[in-house]
Image (cartoon, rainbow, N blue to C red):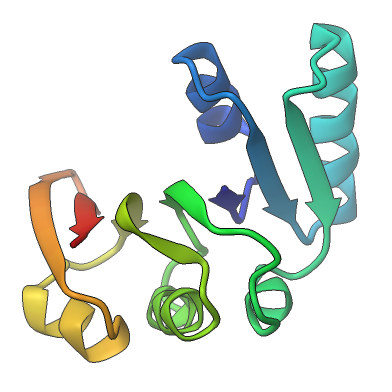
Length: 139
């Protein structure tokens, strides 16, 4: 699942790297329409986009769980913390799933354990310029 899909770069990259199914969530209508157009150009039935607010989507109990979640929310709005909490509380995470996230600040284990009720492990963490990125695993 690619929350805050934007241009769809992470969604399409996941698909090109072997993901069987990708679900992208995008609130902005123009971005959503562009995602749909690009999917149609690829003639792919393995990728679906939903036009809705990601936090609203996460506010409901999960209809399915995900093995890999891409989380690149808008910066400086505290959306990352809210998203992590809702992913955990509403049953989107499976044991052994991975979450790739990007943020404007360093991701700490205390931030993660404060927002995610499942046990987690930071597998990789780096930064490039002002963007911090992190891969975590739900144990």
